[in-house]
Image (cartoon, rainbow, N blue to C red; front, side, top):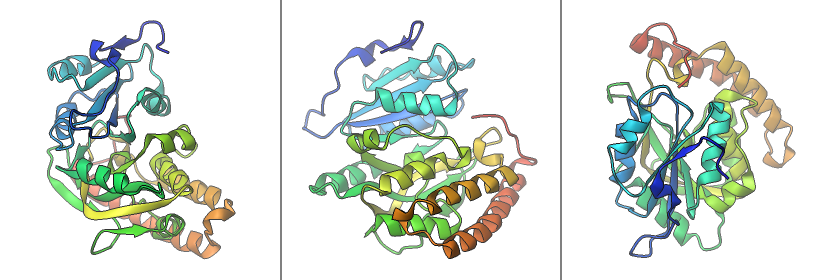
Length: 302
């Protein structure tokens, strides 16, 4: 139910249906706050996908910028714009996205990031072929780009080809690597029914909120890695990812300890020790790269 004062585009009042060719509907939700600068590129990357059966929610968290005007320029009936009457913060806005989605499949796409051409159709096809529903999520590699869209470096598991990955083993692999091998929220696709089973996003460890959701998903099944690029993750002076350092490392430690205690994943103390050591190295390396791009970290929220 909408709150008093909530702004919602008229197209969002239409019922969600599959595409004309019977293709399954995908809900792609963009949580936005002061995102007008990069939002056009993000929206374009969705609208240009070969899989056309999409409802694209842009959920603006009471931004003071021109987000509404930017979205209105597109005029595509698949876009549904919501403006929260008050600022909910990242966790509240991400959960608002989950509440609004109606499609068979679900993706949360950060306002600065881009979907790789053709990636959505590929991910949908993999999940559609999984009749038993044993695959919890599909993901690929991603390219980290700067504020001008230039590639900085690639990220992902070191696998030469696409393959199915045991969910619990992938969790252990992420922990022992000291990093998120799966990627940011926009890099993966899952069934909305599974997302509803998983429940709300949890920011107990803010820098780990995306990996926490992936881990919770993998408690229900396996992952499929496509071996191809699925998305581009943008770093810019105002993004969360640039505010690195001690806080992120402490977040990772607390996050790992939470999952070590969950015996069903089989994470060992050795996994924890190796992962924390690698996390220190990873955090330092990223900080050097970001500092070379932008100077001292800007901790404004994005």
